[in-house]
Length: 335
Ligand code: R5P
Image (cartoon, rainbow, N blue to C red; front, side):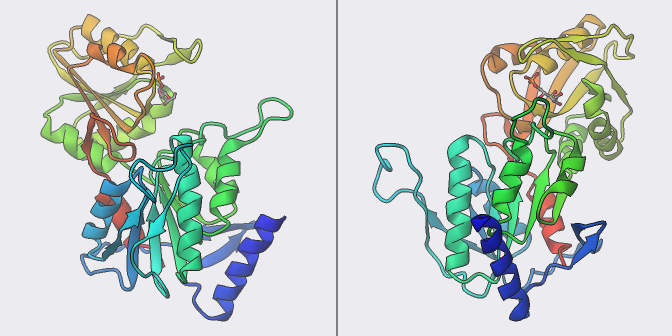
């Protein structure tokens, strides 16, 4: 209740002072972001970008793309940080009266706390509008209550983002994107497929493959950018570490194939698909994902692939593609 009241007070305060720039309208009881479709190269007026420690390179990239200032943040009060691992943030530049874009992936868990500390500090420093860019939305997987008493964790995180933020941009949420419509602030999913499609085009793949039906829309979009056809497999998940793929003949003999997925976590999905492709005669297999978590046995699993690429939504040694242009276009399109 306290949280909601604080959010509403901030929205009202900004409305009263005429500072609420987001075009919020009610649609069947939900608020939606209205965006324009024109992408230009002009600087976005009076915007500053702040990056949380999970997303500094991407935040800098976004600031560069939209030609606006970047506000540095200190993440340690003293070298080595707090002995108990608690987070610390301090804005090192002014944001009073500005439209601030806060870029921070909410994974792993301490990065969620850092997001809230930064959002609060930005508001206390007098920002007039705060756009949350959450490149990888940690806790996005649980988009419904499967058993009584469970938290719908995607909505829980969104509810707390809404305390200080006016709108949310995120990418490839690892759940049914319909969940975004239930969030208590205007939310838009930005696609990372143009960036992945561009990389796979330059890597000269012959065909793209979705490792399951959930990734079909991603492979379809990336294929239109890469200018190659796509196919898909049907996956059955046995448990968190084990997947099975239904037998299917693919036209991949002698070809270079790109596998496209939203997330690589344990690498089980990609490894199973890659082995099937190699068994059917694929010459080369490149695994591409938006969010590379690479947990547990991932590195061993990914040896089944000739190359692995991930975007900068989550930083890892496989980060080879930036989605800064995609988020920059979405920020430019905000009303
Ligand atoms: C779920 O179906 C997602 O699209 C990914 O395929 C999944 O999260 C990948 O997980 P893992 O790498 O552990 O197989």
